Amino acid sequence: MVFKLTCLVVLVFGFTQSAVLPPVEKCQLGDSACLTPAFQKMMPIFMVGISENNVEVLDPMDMDDLAFELAGLQFTLKGGTLKGLKNSVVDNVDWDTKKKSFTVNFHLDVSVKGHYTAAGRILILPITGDGQLRLKLKNLQIKLEIFYDIVKNADGKDIIKPKKYKIDFEVVDHAHYHLTNLFNGNKELSEAMLSFLNDNWKQIADEFGGPMMDLAAKTLYKNVKNYFEVMPIEEIASV
Image 1 (tube, rainbow, N blue to C red):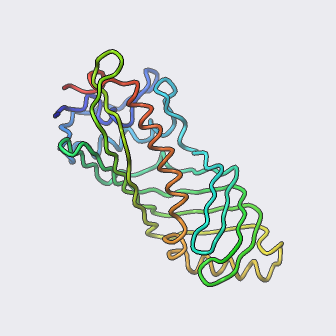
Image 2: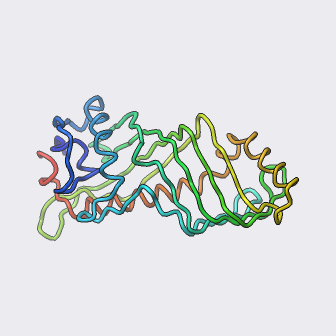
Image 3: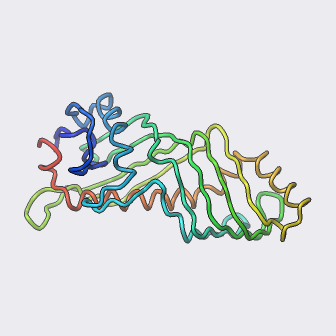
């Protein structure tokens, strides 16, 4: 099925009647040169939430109840928030109507805060901690691919039904880690660990960043699905 976007990326990023949309041209889905700036204009609107389309506020994003055990590290994050998605820069959009998938490549600076616990080892060093986490990622590159089907809703109208997603990420420029109450407040050990984390930011981001990125991608994907479930294609695209 080939169709044009009615309002740039409304297919993915939606809009509200109260939102003031920027003027945009219709895009053929295979036209990356048109789709990319269209997605860029709609990204901030989607990320601040669209309640009538069941899209939650995504900036800040709730990162509560993150827990993982990976490479000898046991880690939890409670009451966490991620900020920065509304300032994302869209690098490229590729929509493949034959494969029924679309890929969005974008980058951003993000910050994460919350209450953490850590135990075990991180790379070569032992770690224990129970306190506040502040994490900043500069130039986080994300590739998000979503696969979908075209199905009929209860009214017999065609809708896009996302069925799975895939995410890849890389922190390109820098990551800064700050954790309080490491080693029960031992200043010398804490300072040594923080220096180690920040000196080895790239390896740590690559090895241990996956669970946090997966949680963010799961939340984003859920809201894309919510949007599509209430918006027939004929209302957002010229078929």
